[in-house]
Image (cartoon, rainbow, N blue to C red; front, side, top):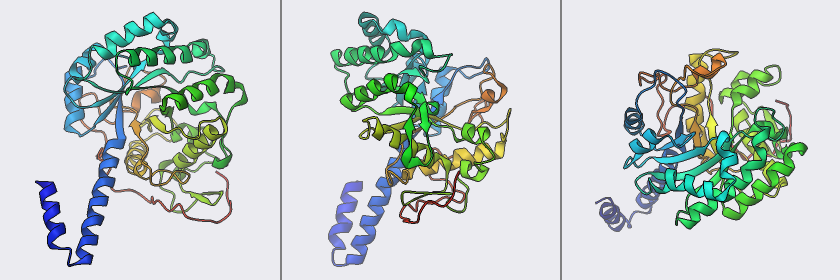
Length: 375
């Protein structure tokens, strides 16, 4: 019906170039809005003793028009509840399982049990093999040697089952960036290159995106002297950083473009980046408040539709962290990242379709002024 109506208007109004132009503009805006709808998901963490059942959570996703979900492990009740939901899923391989999946037979069994057995009634989009593993982080360094072998084995298993369209990646955090300022000079730490460069080459060869957990909150909280709250919350009224002819009004763009620059220097300039986590806590630490969290989530949902100064007009696939407050996490601020309370009531009036009011944000990427200020 919609196609027929469009054809009718086009045919009956071709005499009016202005009408045709308005109609074309409307179609383009509709397509842009759809791309924004598709770009925002929410991470479903389960570290709480008061959370809803998996079927109730899936119903909440659907009722709120949240079309993408990140699971941190192949939780069977959640996968069962996802059957037929049409929600696209990023499912994780926990760090504790990386060594096991570095064995091809174990990886094949994992894919059989957790992917193939649910496909196609569950719409898997990515397998995230490991989360925030770093060869120089004492907590996760012991897993680093297993990440790439596990990625390869999972990829091979998916292909053998005819599921090569499901992309395999790993989620990094921004501590792997050695230089982030200015964004055009972004580069990875020298002591992680031997770990990260082969992973980047794998992603390039499989045309898979890099997953990155990007938190302006932690960057701001770690350096409030040089980074303003407005810059971290997307509310700066003016450009804060000029770099290579590009103006930066928010820290999120600067962090993303530093990551893009680092990828270029590591042979990964063709890679897309999926923001696999981003968020702001509402309590429990420095600069945590309901108002700051609401501002951040509202603005990031809207902002990722428009790309960054380095890659403008290209929506960034983004997953908000997290669906619920999780009372079994620590330290205290980690309990307060939810966009919903455990009773399924929203903490903030968010529109996950990405068409909310934005505070002091725009997409003016065309400046040619020189670098004038630091973060």
